[in-house]
Length: 165
Image 1 (tube, rainbow, N blue to C red):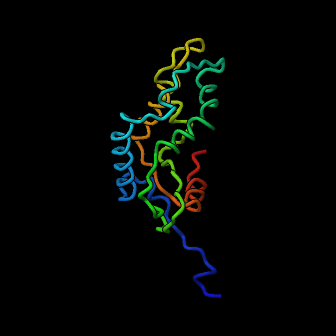
Image 2: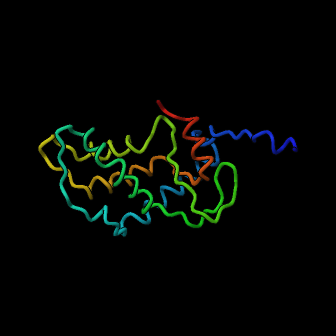
Image 3: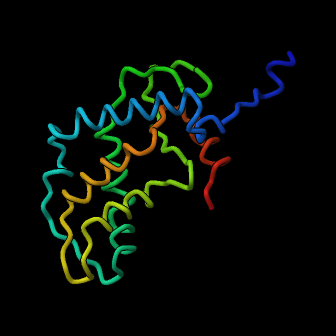
């Protein structure tokens, strides 16, 4: 057995949280440009759904309701970087779609971004908030941080090493 096969390569995932790193800056600019170009003309169902949501648990209840399905699927369907075929950390090339990974800088996560989007429109537990407005704002807020295209292994390792909790 060779030494290369027996010891894992130690990758530095900190570059993904460093606003001065080339990887961070490139992914941030790509994400922002993508949103600026695609969002105004997007016809995704999430941006057409004018259903008004209320929840007796307030903002946190709305976040819980939208996080697992609507928010996850909105990200997967909106952000399609099909031209990126190499993991931005390890460089492995793949014909399979890469994972979209949220930058974990300053504890940013999907639920926190979604909460900020809801807060933008939220009045009180009795006033409905429209799904399409929340989802548009949710995507807009993604322009503040980069989305990375990572292989499954790097995505899992990055999230594990940078868990904000």
